[in-house]
Image 1 (tube, rainbow over the protein chains, first blue to last red):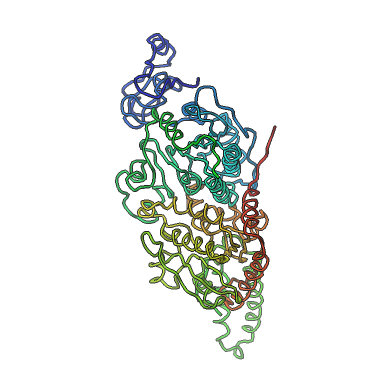
Image 2 (cartoon, helix red, strand yellow):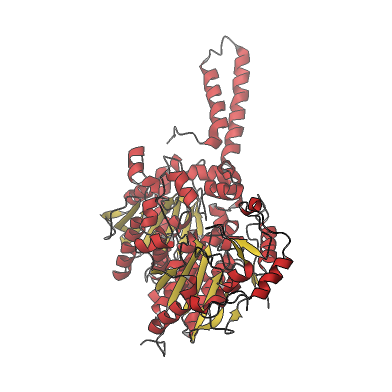
Amino acid sequence: MLFGVVGSRNENRVRMPIADWFKAREDRKYTPSEQNRGSGDVPDGVWSKCESCKHIIYEGELAQNARVCNYCGHHFPLTAPQRIELLVDEDTFEETHAHISSGDPLEWSSPKSYPVGLESAREKSSLAEAVMTGRASIADHPVVIGAMDFRFVGASMGSVVGEKVARAFELALAEHRPLVLSIASGGARMQEGMLSLMQMAKTSAAAARLADEGVPYISVLTNPTYGGVTASFAVLADVIVAEPASLVGFTGQRIIEQTIRQKLPKGFQTAEFLVEHGMIDEVIPRSDLRAHIGLLLDYLDIPGGERS
Amino acid sequence: MKSRFVMEFERPLVELERKLAELRELNVSENPELAVEISDLGRQVERLHEETYTNLAPWARVQISRHPDRPKTQDYVDACFDDVIELHGDRHFGDDEAMMTSLATLAGRRVAVIGHRKGKNTKENLRRNFGSPQPEGFRKAMRLMRLADKFALPIVTFLDTPGAYPGVEAEERGQAWAIAESLALLSGVRVPVVVVGIGEGGSGGALAIGFGDRLIMLENAYYSVSSPEACASILYKDAAHACDAAVSLKMTAADLLHFGIADEIVAEPLGGAHHDHEAMFSAVGERVNAALNELVGEEPTDLVEKRYERLRAIGVFEEGA
């Protein structure tokens, strides 16, 4: 287990064992003083600071609560492996297309070399690319699942993300398994230029084919989801849900402010704002996501799959 | 046609030409040395002229693609097509003037035309958001795609946009949704789709109507994942690096041909399409017509399948065991 999500409801949450707490106290390098507390300077791996309510939270506690702040409900980011573990039935995930990696088609060197950036992303994330895909089951429904990882070049979509996502759609189509994608992205990957932009068309075309066959597709939008990923496969799902307070949009807020010189409305581009404007179905807290998707699949994943 | 608008990269040449013109106005018979200077300067101007307009840098091409006198979607529609009927509105919210949708006839063949539409002057540009569509623009384009599919009309699109409109209302009305749905729809229309990049091909706003069975690029048109300015401000943290970003992004017509994304390039007169509109109209009309001739005989299912394969083949990656 990467972290201890036991069941999907709060009452099932396992509190941190007291022995762990004392162990953690011994392990930590120093006690965060009042002075340090505000600076965000928190020792790695033991305590984390909630960026929303500023509480300092014990890592073990955060892990047991699916990385949701106990005090204010803020959703910390999840890695792709954590995301998959959160969503699928235990030990059912089997990764597909794991060994596809990016080239450097534009020979991008300035201001920073693309291959060097990719290498540091691989080291930082222990992932080959910004999306992880595979087969699994959710509430006993066999599915194809994919999760994007923002640590990897901002989960931007280049050739590899586009290819893996397209293959996930094609696998779902071939095996008539519903597709569930957990999405986060800064947009298209600049360093692959037009090849990145065209991935929007490629993934959308694959999504259209899946839709034509009547195989369900559910997308989970997480913080943040922007640009070319939002404007392609992310929003072509049959049902779109989002985690609380996630920012989702096409153009980033800074760019809108700069180019249009408009004041942004309160809550602009949050998941709640999108529900209000009719763009997504529902805001679902992380603790309820698996159960919610399971129930959706009970409606949409018709046994026998194929329709005449 | 001699344009008065001077692009940044032309400035040194224009300066030198002005100097030469001034000297020529002086009385040469009184000053024989002047004649020598004039002929020297004349040669310099010639040399600089050639240097300026051959092997154009990507950033110079971007400037040409944005030249105010460059022929625009409406110009091509007026010049190349007959019996044009413009259709209006997205049936949801409004009629976005930044997106033009028409029924039209090209060399006797009835087609549906969709294109980004910039204005010819500030007043028009304010109404048309300088060619940046709102969600209703993309939804209007989708209306025409459905109509073309239903009535078996081949689709011709013209790309000329800095990008989808980056505004609050655009976000509220689902800019990303409109683009995504347009991509999904266009990928499956059962009629030929010929795309012509005539000016700016800015990001998702261009792509929404910007892929199909053939992509024809004008020599100085660009097509890019992001405008060079936006790329510079994101990666270089400074929009002044747009010139470098234009190189890095590999966004010229020649680059697109190299990556197998574009199929052909239409040459422009030296210095850009604005120097000879008529030549551009006839070249573009001819090439679109030739592409349609190749495509119209295809079975609709084959067309859609080939379009999918074409998209599926785009991407550069390595696959290990």
